Amino acid sequence: MGCGIPILSLPEINIISGDSADISWTIQDNKGALTDIQFSTCTFSMAYYSGREDGAVLVKECTATDMEGKGYNTFVLGLTSEETLDINGIFIYQLTITQLNGKVKSKQGVLNIYRNMNLITL
Image (cartoon, rainbow, N blue to C red; front, side, top):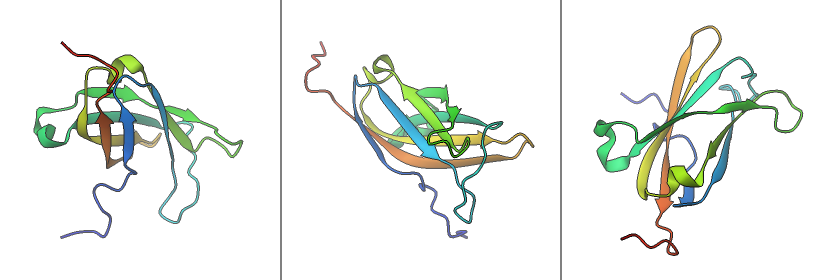
């Protein structure tokens, strides 16, 4: 039944609650060549790993970026400290890329948000 591509094929991400983070993904085709994404959109979604059926706890658009002068081939997500402040745990994150021609591709990975030991929660 498998197609040889793991469902959780995106890299694992680790951050601490209350921290801001800029996370980037370089987009390549099946042969490893950089893909022009200037006119594509990318939606980042995350849900608790154990409660995926409950839906996303955060949905945010990523920005297409020319990171190293090699063309627009990287999506960047900026998470603010407010967005990570009151959550911690293991999450599934998903990137959904929609190309100009309407083709949609989604991939998932694991996002760990660790409790900030300096924050006191009452």
